Length: 147
Image 1 (cartoon, rainbow, N blue to C red):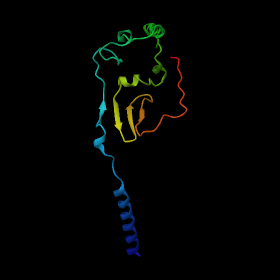
Image 2: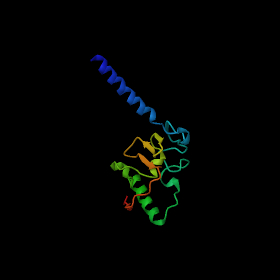
Image 3: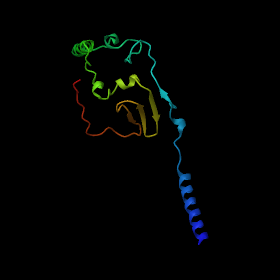
Image 4: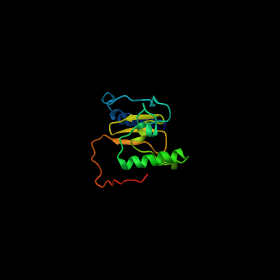
């Protein structure tokens, strides 16, 4: 009886090893090696900004349309008065793109054959970029959000 259960165990292990041997890892030489955590380099003093050589706020000299210049000016005035302006992150909203690429906290990039993952340790700021050739979803709804 002991011999029969030993043979069964050996056959089970052999079957498992045979299945694992058939599995192949992805060819890592095809993908960039971006392992580790990435942090931003602050050139200008102050918090993270889109152009790291300039200060935040009006110092960015963003090429805004007159409509958005007025929205930006009102937001800066509100912040100067002690408010939050139109910064939705103060209400626990994710900053979204392109702001998360300011790398305001450490970022990690994972490249796989199916997708590239950008991991940022903050409020739901992770991104998954599919690279497996799939098409865009058929019913994508784009909306303009009020800030």
